[in-house]
Image (cartoon, rainbow, N blue to C red; front, side, top):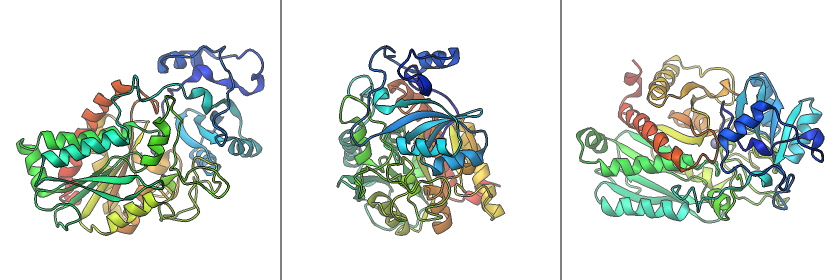
Length: 426
Ligand SMILES: [Zn+2]
């Protein structure tokens, strides 16, 4: 995720210079903390608890005022989550932080993720779907809508969980070919971005429940729609399997040194290993040992390559209220002016429907090996990345409804436009 709003458990932020002394907080920090956290832990409790043995990650706030500086930070392993003025916030491994400081960046604040992991799916966030619950919803939709909805697996994640796909097509099912314009929706490349599963999953529910309505019916009869709400099910399960969120971003690959995970949104094959991705396995932006090294991205590659009719895609992330188009790896615009117009116009329309801001991905910072750069360069697919809203990875169940409503509207627009995106942009 990448974003521009602050909304985190800032009450727990501890100034670097005074971790053993009385913490000092700016009024703004405290105000933000009160606004964003529930429940707010007492500051006096467990100030500096280490995460799991292998997890030495922290939430940090760093001074960086340009996209070039932000790209450098991402390259050093910082997963940039919030950009506010000249301050950038996100998660990074202790070794990344040492490098960031060695490069001359000022790290203002730093707190162990172990101290932030205080909320859990089971209780107040039970409205969110874990892997089993999502699977059950998808199976139910397929069972109740024969002749329209089919379900299959695009492959297995690192630990063996299925990468479930729902297909909406009135004349083809499963892996069967279709010449109808195809649209692919994906969620949860990044495990902790749980809202990014809810939006595509609830889009599927909406399509099924409203299949008889003329405007939905017209789309369902003329399109080939694929919905994969959980690209990284292993990471999602790891994030929610205890009563405490673990802030897991990557998949669950066990790297040779024992570090966990590859950033799936840095593992795609176009310009893999370039700017904004880390080559260190402990980093949250680790790009993996090679392009498409991960079973999850490999599955999407095969899935897309076997379906030439796919015209456009959305990869949902959270949180920031943004809609991105390529390039992500470069600050340059894509060279094809007609395609660029399609991206700008279509993203602009979806921005109007969501209230989000649409821009080229690298406007915030560059990152290489992301989904859209590959979709567009390798397949000519108009791939968009949405940073949903919520102001946090864990915004609470109340965030689901509004996000689903506006993003369903944007998705329906895109499904409609998929018939001829260049015409839609005229
Ligand atoms: Zn993300």
